Length: 316
Image (tube, rainbow, N blue to C red):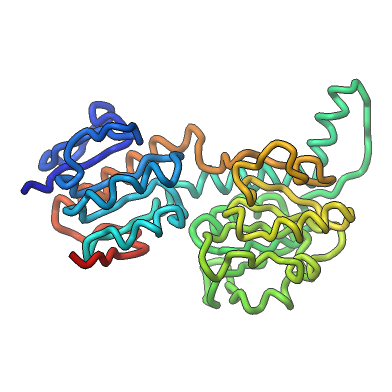
C-alpha cells in the first residue's frame, strides 16, 4: 500500500516549489475525499472548517505520518489523536499567525482604549461627542501566554511608549526582552496591569483561567483583550464585571463561539467584539505556503518536521 499522498486545502497547481516525491490531493473539507485516505502520509488540515469535518478522515488515514494544522492552537484536533498511528506527528502552525494576531491584539487594545466603538455609534447618530480617553502610552500591559504570538504583540506595543510589559507563561524563564513570569505569579501581577492581553492556547490548565478571582484582581477601569481562545475566559464572570462597569473588554474569541444572537455579551457595556478574525487576513496565505514548503521539504528529506505539539498513539 502506498502512503505517498499529501492532502492540501489549497490547489496544488497554485503552489510552487513543492517536493516532487509526493502525489498532491486537494481536499478542503468537501463530502467526497480526493483519494483513499489510507494512502495519505501528510494531512494538511483545512483552515476554518468545523471540528467534525477536519477530524472525519483521521480514522481512515492509517498511514498518515504528519497532521499539519494551519492554526496556532490545536485543541480542535486533540480528540483525533487516538485515531493516529503510533509516531504520527501533530504540528501546529508555528509562527504563521504571529503577524495577523498581534496586529489585531494591538487594534483591539487601541480601539477599546480610545473609544472607537462609541465614536462609530456617535457618527451614525450625527453626534459630535468629544471626551478624554486613556492612551496606550504609559499603560502597563500584561501578556498572558508569552510565546511566539505574545512576543509579536510586545514588538508592536513598544513603539506606543507603554510603561511596562509584564510577560506571563506557564513557567518562568528569561526572554530576550526580559523576565517571563510563571502563571502562578498572576495574583501578584494582575493588580499592576492596566491592560491584560490573553494570547494563551486552550489547554486543561488554561480553560477557565480568567475566572472571577482573576478578574477581581485587575484594577478598576482595566481592559481585558482576548485573542487566544474563548473558553480561557469565564464568560459569566466577565459579564458580571462588564455589567458593573468596572472593567472593559475587547474580544476576538468568545465562549460560546460563534456567539449566538441574543447572547448578553452582545449588549454588555464596555465590550468590543470581533468574530474570531485574528488569523484570516491577507497575510495568511503567503505565510501558510512558506510553512508548507518548509515542512514538506523536511518530510521528503526524512528530517524531523517542526512545530510538533503531540504524537499519535492508536493501537492497531
